[in-house]
Image (cartoon, rainbow, N blue to C red; front, side, top):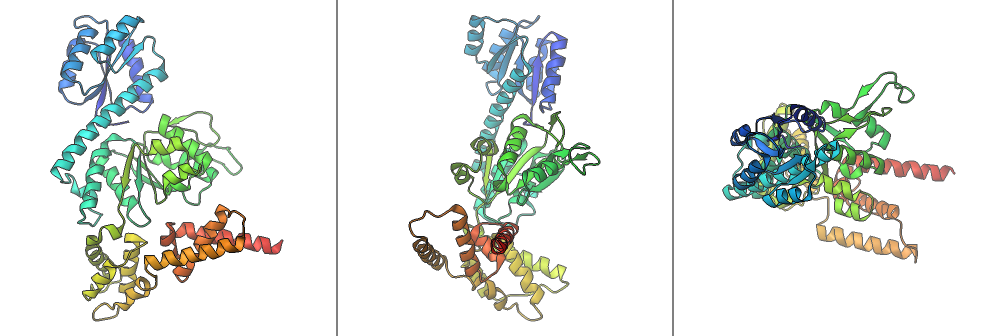
Length: 476
């Protein structure tokens, strides 16, 4: 829940105030304040940190109805939830007419109270974000540039990304960071974590290569005796991320069973350690990242529609390096300097033609690829000016995008002709793409992975799996 404002409970019955506050705090709503004297409500509001009010109607001194009228008139940005024993249609209609966000009848079911307050928080948070985003866009400035100190850029597109991150950081709603491999998705996630001001850690989990059981154990932990070899209980990484941020990288590789568990975590802030029937509560903020097209995965029924929309409360799209070429020279200088320090060498000078060469290159591996090129060049450099040959070995080894497309189209046509009238299987098409990417990259897995939109680890895993399957088929 958004931690930038508080929920104010107003009721003259102390036991109702305390029990309601406990219920909301247990549900992950951390900032809850109580007030039994209705005359003090406006004082709380004027302090500026109240985002939602839960209000009883029948109280001494100032009635709930009068307060509702005043709050909706003078503070329309604050949702007011009426919680009263009056189970009368006319009263409910009048409260909604005055501007109440919701109407709850005592005794209120805990789940109903939590749901109503969470919806009010989300609406209030959304309004705040729209206002702040508007202000950011009008000023066209980043107010906390230190949070993005690790990202080297002068791009206007990246400035817009930074502005959006500043707006969404305090909301604590899930964030999905999208972008090709190597664009710096984790750096953006770390910046959002710093901007949010949460006291907890930034904890990273790479989804790729983890099956459901391994992922559950890694994230949620297990109880003693949960399975063979579980000699003692283990706390998962989500415990380490308490009051902090849990970063789930390569979320597009998440299996169906794990998707269900993650959805529950996002919706209810609940999870079950392996072997436990007792739900645990998490207050970690979830940021996910992927280089895959999640909309396509949803259309293909391999990624849950409800999980997709839950993750997309906030969506950050990072532009590839080829769309911000003004950053190439800056990044090159920074990487050469970093590499020289690591290899204990003097920072080498380089010919002006190098910038031209790199600017005309598409960088399928984005910033990660440029960094690898710079480090490799410095490692091999001996003296004098940096040789262009170090870069031509990679930059010149791939055909242009048009030639790549033509080669793939021709190979795909030949392959379809060989298969006859049979409709190709998805795994066969994937194998074809992997083979063609490896051919174009001349066996370089890093470059091939960039062409495919895979991480290096994912491509290696696919190649090893194919090799293993082919050995099995040969042996049989």
